[in-house]
Amino acid sequence: MEIVALGNTGIDVSRLSIGTGSNGWNGRSNQTDLGLEAFRDLLLYSHEKGVTFWDSADQYGSHQHIKEALKEVPRESVTITSKTVSRTRETVEEDIKRFLKEIGTDYVDIVLLHCLTQVDWPRRYPDAMEALLRCKEQGLIRAHGVSCHDFGAFQTSSMTDWVEVVLARINHSGVQMDASPADVIRTMEHMANVGKGIYGMKVLGMGKLAKDSESQKEAIEFVMGLPCVHAMTIGMTSQAEVDANVAVVNEISNI
Image (cartoon, rainbow, N blue to C red; front, side, top):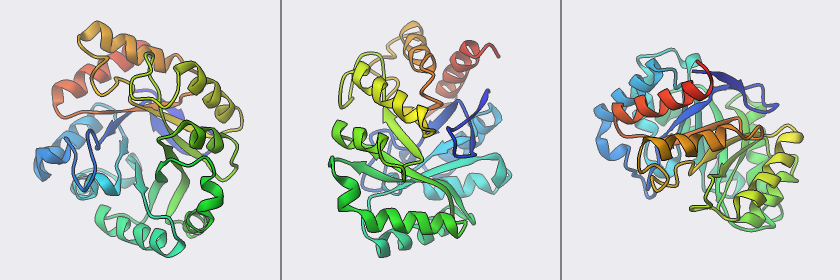
């Protein structure tokens, strides 16, 4: 699996990340529904295949599964993302301390403010931004950023220096995106030009763009062909899905 730099963050990641939040919210997801042992084993299987970028969130309930998997692999061999919906200094700091215990680690590589929907989010949540900055200074996280569910919020992220990493909804058909692919790509190009790390989600449009192996390859190839997207996260629930996605990514990467 190809390893790439995530913008100017100083963090290197596998081109493919395993998502842990398909249809996820309120402490569950398709992945966590597999059960603690089964999803732990899938994380370890993905690691064996070179997928060393694991995307989690408080809202998915996947921290405990990652904790179990980390008992079997070196911590430094995995890049872990989590996300918080807290918006005050106190609650964000409390979240980070709790995340560390739940994941069983001294640091989380990337923490995102999750599901931003207001164009003026930096004005609304300066305390949350400050809290994550302090956590980075203390070595509790390595980078901070955002995931957005609104195009205005997404555009604001491209112009906000505090944002180091962006989780962006992108695919070739505009499925479950906040704007057209052209508009999102134009914004991501600006992000990449100023050094932000970008990884894509909804690459397969929650499965709608992967009806067969050819459509799956087409969707992945589209996103991998965008220089402004450094990596992508795809939710997987079986070894067969890991094998299929890894094979496509490696083929496109000429590995």
